[in-house]
Amino acid sequence: MAYDKFEILKSTAVPLPIENVDTDQIIPARFLKATERKGFGDNLFRDWRYNSDNTIKEQFVLNNPIYKGKVLVGGKNFGSGSSREHAAWSVYDYGFRCVVSSFFADIFRGNCLNIGVLPVQVSAEFLDKIYKAIEANPATELEIDLPNQTITLLESGENESFEINDYKKQNMLHGYDDIDYLTKMNEEIQDFASKRPF
Image (tube, rainbow, N blue to C red):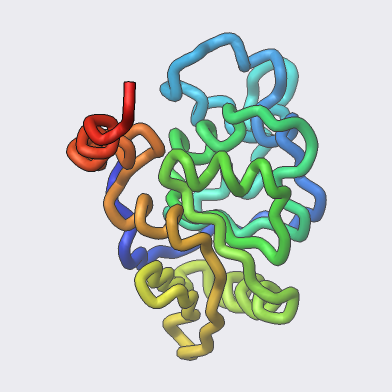
């Protein structure tokens, strides 16, 4: 199993109402030397979280103790820019299991799905409702129901459905990456291979 199974997540959320957040802002290029997925969370939004002398920027949302949870709520066009997988790795390593936005860059979306971060695309109207709810009450909880493909503001009961590729959905429900998926099909692959002419 490549990562934790994702079924139903109930969590508070961290609001980041900034549009066009690109992968260099998510994880600056100078931190891309490692090839394992570990340790990237420390540098998630590094230049927004810290000053050049490594002191904390107290005004940035990840440094505000009233906001916490496993859900990051980003603005429109989240994850644009380069195709670096490290951006998704840093989101996962920090502790987020879901990113909500009204639009995702395709490559970032795919990278998230490959490692167990669920990108939930909602309408601009519902995204605005989420931001307003969190602003009114930072303890606001969201429920992300992957089997039923819904996201719900638990306080009000308002919800919206989201789309996901069925293959990726099944992988996330089981905690599989692409290699796990193929490994689980080993008998079928061997059977198919045995019937092929040499």
